[in-house]
Amino acid sequence: MDPVVLAYLGIAAMIGLAGVGSAYGVTITGNAAVGAMKKNMDAFGNYMVLSALAGSQGLYGFLSYFLLAPKVFEGMTMAAAGAVLGCGIAVGVVCLLSAIRQGEVCANGIAGIGAGYDLFGKTMILAAFPELYAIITVAAAFLIGNTLPSMPV
Image (tube, rainbow, N blue to C red; front, side, top):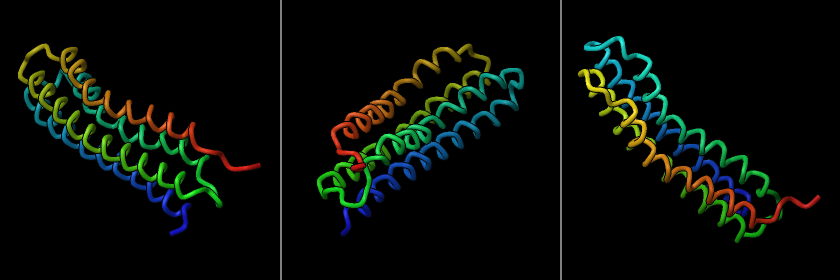
C-alpha cells in the first residue's frame, strides 16, 4: 500500500470518528434539552450551552487535520505514514467516545436543570472531564506531527 494512502486513511478516520462522536453527543443533549424545556423553558440558555459542549470533539478532529496534513506527501516513509495512521485512529476513537460520554453528562445536567435544580456550573465542571482526554489527543497529534518530516521544498 502506498504510504500516502495509509496516512490519509488515518486522517479520514480521525475526522470521521470525531465528527460522528460529536453528532451523537449533541443529539443526546439536544434530546434532553427538548424534554427539559417542557418543564422549564426559562433555562433555554443553559440547555443550549450544555448541548453545544459535545460538539467540540468534532472540531478537535478537524484541528488535528491541520496539524498532520502538512506531513503527508508523496515519497513519505511508511513509518511516517504509520504514525499518521495511528495518531488519526487514536484522536478519532478518543474524540468519538469523549463526545458521547460528555453528551451523557450534559444530558443529565440538563434534566436536573429542567427539574428545577441549580446544576449549570457543576455540570460544566463535570463535563470538562471527558473533554480533557480529547484535548490530550490533540496535544499528542501536535507532538507526533512535530516529529515527522514535512514535505521537501
